[in-house]
Amino acid sequence: MLLTLVVELEDKPGQLLRVLEPISKMGGNIVGIVHQRGRKTPLNRVPVEIALTIDEKKVEDLIKRIRNLGIVVRSYNEVKLIETTSLLLIGHIIHTDLSDTIKRVDSENSEVVELHICMPEVKKPSTAIVTISAESSEELNKAISKLKRICREKGIVVIEPIEEEFL
Amino acid sequence: MIRIAVIGFGNVGQGFLELIMEKRDEIEKRIGKFKVIAIADSKSSISGEFKLRDAIEFKRRTGRLPEDRNAIEVVEQEDYDVLVEATITDIKTGGDGLRYIKTALKKSSHVVTSNKGPLVVAFKELMDLAERRGVKLMYEATVGGVMPVIRLIKDYLAICEIERIMGILNGTCNYILSRMEEERLPFNQVLSEAQELGIAEANPSYDIEGIDAAAKLVILANTIYRGDFRFEDVERIGIESITPEAFEIAAKRGYTIRLIAEASENVLRVSPRLIPINHPLAIRGTMNALMIKTDTAGNLVVMGRGAGRKETATAMLSDLIEIYNS
Image 1 (cartoon, each protein chain N blue to C red):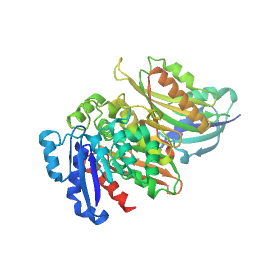
Image 2: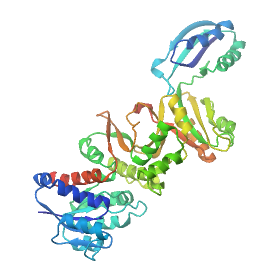
Image 3: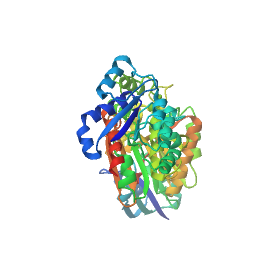
Image 4: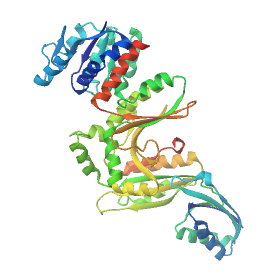
């Protein structure tokens, strides 16, 4: 089957190779690669769209392998998550049921694609950066509103980026 | 001869008088002869023939002025062309300042104020009153200190549609955040440092909870959108919960954190935001800045000192001159 995969790569040499290796190892055949340089993410990563043919049964496994390498897979197959943003969260992120927070933000049109947490001391508030991708900017805004609502409920402070158009 | 009454004789009121003494010739070249006919604080005053320097000296020595008439009596009884109002801000009720300004406008006197409270509480009412009486209510000093934002919006950008504004309107918060960014120190430690330096008040909540920035944002938004925004309309988050790790994580991605006041036609908010490290609003120290997004003039940025005796006085003096220039 033809698979379209969008990954976010750091803008430095050697990154593309890391994605291509598992594809070739699993017998995939690259059809095309497009760097979406004009769509750099707030984290300064370049979305790269890779079209390939591969056995349908192997798709889930391939995605898993790529993600295990620490590479952000923004979308694959039909659903394209093209809008993305990162927000900081400060508070008792884990003690207020982190997986519940993420589950509630995830929807058919948007999902939490990355999360890093920094916990200096057990009882002190932790700080996290969460990256959300969505199909469109409207869906992304919906997801952000949802995250803000959940965090307000849980006493977590959300620090949003300023609009990119204002750069 | 332009007759001026000065109400409120603390740091701002005294700073204003010092500046008009220093710049008297320059001012008179532009607006003609003027005279301060009365000065008052909440409980005492001076009027008639007196020297400005003596009034300041008297206040410093005794903590008051020689006459027993208080501010409201002076505002009601004296005849003046311009009321310079520099009393203490009360953003909940507008405080005494609101009463002084209303009284002066009703007497068809112009008003120059540095006091946010009355404008936050009763912007539309005061502007309508001034218009009905054919006088001007000037308030450049209430927002961003000496940054000429009000006049920029009202005059220079008068024909533009302002889609959005975004700015740093509180120097104390900006100082604390930029120190946290540089030193990766906890919030409380940097706050204590700021208090020792006199940058933050003993009770810092007015600044660090974003109250001051929100009050300024209400004034700006009402100026731009001619609306009737209230303080309660501002979605507000302070900076007290920000951790040093937040700067660490943000910096790895080329970002920093600042308290940003933002307004568009339907959203007013003051909150800590991630901004790119090389963004014009990623300024350091106690500076203020405002970015204005317009339809035909693109983005504009103004930066300057948001507080200070001379800076505030400069903004007020500029307002005074503007009344007679236009």
